Image (cartoon, rainbow, N blue to C red; front, side, top):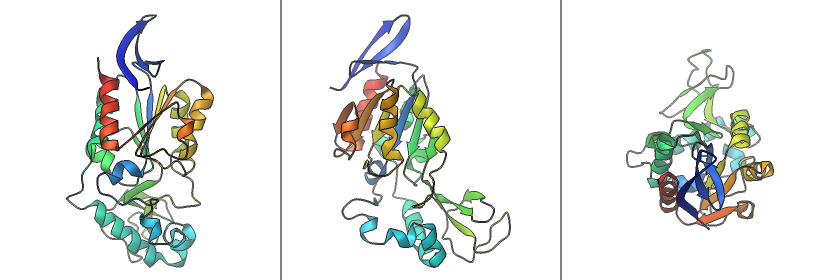
Length: 259
């Protein structure tokens, strides 16, 4: 069953009926987004059959050990990703724009937690956003940990503007074996949300793949998957809709915001 656009008053509160569960109109929403939403803008994904990990060893370019062994290789890899992201033809799609519209118009709190390292959510207008796996358009220093915006190629010859050490700058990206960013804030939002929505995720990258189970254990929030195909954790969601994000996300948000 889908979201019914009907609203009703219960005990003086304005409610929206979602799959037969009342969600307060001022309730809290957490949206998890993955590579599927950005793929529809033309960005390569990492895990699909012809994705990036089918062309390069993740151990070489996405681990601290790989960076220590061959920083030039790692910089070349992320420089190519950064140039692709900065291509003037790349733009947010209808799903990014719909989520930004939800944040602007929803009376309660909306938090987007993204596994993506691109900036398409920001370009669409989203502001309450956590990049749990880092940001491609930032770098940080391995010595002083200072993150800073970075839109050019990066090499071992660059100097940290804070500590003035050379060769210590790395992509501000969470590599395998590292802890995702802002996990305390994410967990607090999951524990208090009334609606959890997962968009374009594979369901096999942890800890994000475990968010739906954590939300359901609390028993207070409705859980919804919007994905091109069923994810590995699709059976954990109370409701699933399958198809392109550029269609499903705007449809869902139009229903949610409808008077």
